[in-house]
View 1 (cartoon, one colour):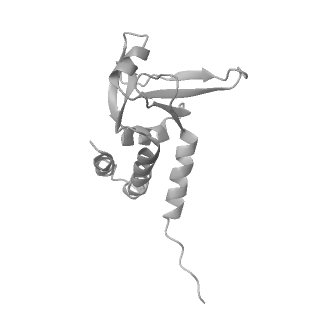
View 2: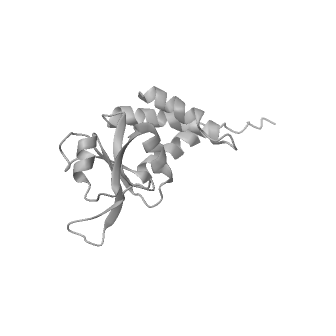
Length: 153
């Protein structure tokens, strides 16, 4: 599925209650632009356990051991994902990039997605923090709120 099809699927599958459809119509193009500008692939492989839970990895800062963050690795291909797995209970499943970005918004324990873009290179990637994504979404929603009517009297 290309990015535009992924965006349309996200909009079509949005819950119909409350303001969710309108919010998704605002958020989806933002996710499209983010994927197009910063990422190289239309889908990524994420390691999951047999219950479908993503593998979370806690990383510690080398110079400041008390500083840590929880990340999910998103691999460019199946071989890299499989090679990085150290457990037979984990499977690597492809996830389209737009739903992957959208899910990051709700994953409270996850600080970042680390996109390993270059096949065979598991040491460098593109990091997208949940905080950065939430700020972009909040700004987009704020810009698209109807302005209150002016009181001319």
